[in-house]
Length: 249
Image 1 (cartoon, rainbow, N blue to C red):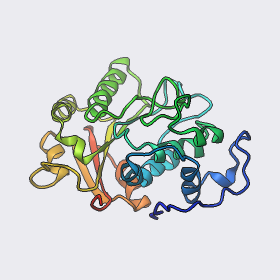
Image 2 (tube, rainbow, N blue to C red; image 1 turned 180 degrees about the vertical axis):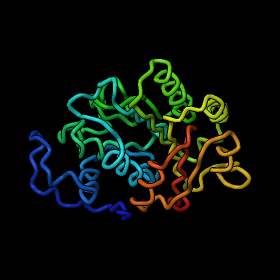
Image 3 (spheres, rainbow, N blue to C red; image 1 turned 30 degrees about the vertical axis):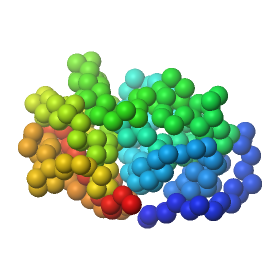
Image 4 (cartoon, helix red, strand yellow; image 1 turned 60 degrees about the horizontal axis):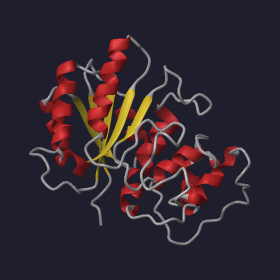
């Protein structure tokens, strides 16, 4: 299922940028086409590429979200902590109708809604202004705890982090707290591309299991495996899915 990024342009299919998103664009195979529209300077292309499959599975198969009502209090929450290199994220948001096609070519411009890091004040459906590593998971723990306190039954919280982020101490505190609180509405997806400086004895999933999380490790390019892992029974505890995508290179 892995669509490798290409340097050459993939045909734009004659779509008009100011028209509603047609059904033909709403597929995984169209994401590279949307990505090639973003011609602004991109410093973290590898980081973007590594997240593409997990992002698509979440938005296409898992998350309960409505682009026409992005602030619905009963929506699922998705927090992209791995906010550097957001082109894949923007392409998925466009494919799902959260942002217009004509915004994509403005990526990286001073007056664009699509900056080098996602901005929740500018982009509908974005829950977290991210990019500074180590912030997303602690915030996701806070969001999940707040929803528990509000007594909301339906909304789930998903957070996507990079393996290198787990070197940040704030994440270790968040992992421990989520386990102690039993935040069963929380699922964390770790994109493992071998970037972590320190790692963890026994693998990334062992770090979470130690704190009482349920855990699974999957091929980060296998869409069916990703879906099965993120929707598995969490057994009344937080859940982590480690998506292995090959070493960064």
